[in-house]
Amino acid sequence: MDFPLVDIHTHGPHVPHQVSVYAHDALAPAPLPGRPYSTGIHPWDAQNLNEDPSTLHRFRDSITPQTVAIGEIGLDFHTARTVTERHRQVYWLHRQGEEAAERRLPIILHCVRAWEELFSALQELPPIPTVIHGFSGSPQLAERLLSVGCHLSYGRGLFRSPKARASLRITPPDRLFLETDTQTEFPLRKIYERAAEERQLPMERLQAIVYTNFQRLFNLRQSL
Image (tube, rainbow, N blue to C red; front, side, top):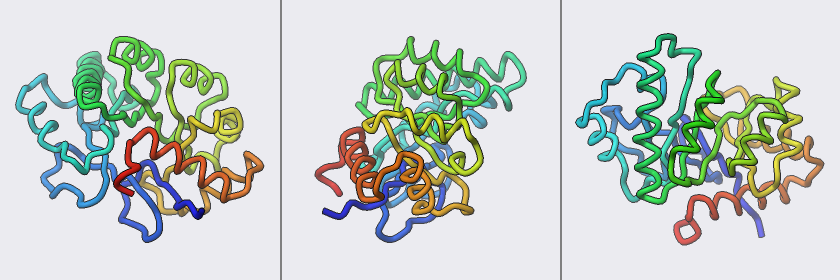
């Protein structure tokens, strides 16, 4: 059986013969995507938002039957420099995580310089299938994330970061995803080829692994 390439997180256009999850900005005025998508309030935006019920309603309105995940959401303390901004990021991570748990949707997480705070948030949230997108951290950090049930998604970091490649090699097959995110330098096939090389797997086997994980976590077996 031929398995398609799966892009777990992309901001780019649809590519024929690939399965992709488009990352939609929940507060954007643009129309909702006409393909499977994740929706969420990015931490860069969350840090500027008050705890306003109308914002929560707008986020909820962006969730439709085409929504397969909540994201990208998370924490980015590189951009959130003040206590208030960091508090807002944590607040909106909790609100969106709670919504994901209620709707039984996985979450796609962005995290920069806030790992301890993210671990605390995950402990406080209901159990949710979780994907760390664009992971390029050390094997030690990867092991911590894996130990609390996270899945790890790799992209352009495989070409730039020895730590990302080392982490990829220790990621269990059933926790592995791949993505393009916002970049256009490395097409999805090149990312798969690099990952297959690092894991010493045939491309067909890697495609089967990621596609199976995608069906299981996103519950899309009937719609693909």
